[in-house]
Length: 319
Image: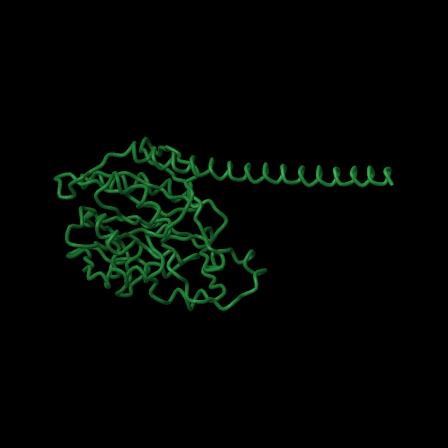
């Protein structure tokens, strides 16, 4: 009986030791994951703070010298960027526009999200500028009559429908759009629901109208749709992602009141100080946050095909 008791005690001790070991290693794993998350967060905040410290704060938007931030939503268009930076720099210098370039480069595995990238660019640039221009990298202005000056009256749509080489409908506000910081914040920036190409600027137009902001466009321009801009997009090289996945078409045709500038989440991974033809600019490599349950169409078609579709409920505000 005594031998049996000792054996049982030994087995019990072994079981307790095994359980204790598992708990210790589990806690170490959790602590390691928490440490990695904390390190990622600290690195992200350090990068954000370094931008804020390195940019000048302008407190009076009515100052004689305003400063323009050129926000370029970007992914894999380096050949176009090589043309864009020198061209726009020379164009703005001829107008004596104080400016700097912010290339917001999406390097995650989600589909391209122009609206979210513009929101991110604004968050990064707002402390160093009094106004912004949302600028497609493949659209270059040719006519010096096109003003990039401070849009005090309201949003100024440089690439208006009567001048753009491709898009001519009246509510079009894409391509090149100037706005003051205050007006961009007033409309809460762009919806972040638009993964893939198209429609985010149509929803943005609805935001402008809802905020009672009048949209101004160039007047008395002596050029036309054929020679006001050069559109350097090559569809054979840069194919646009126009796929509409899950219930994306239905959801993105609605006015979005759940997402915008104040809900945009991202990780700022790296910042590169670059030069092209001695012109300085910065590339901000970012990873956009996507709630796959809420917007499953953020996944690229090859990834999303394995996800079973469920009818989506009306999303709650994530503020």
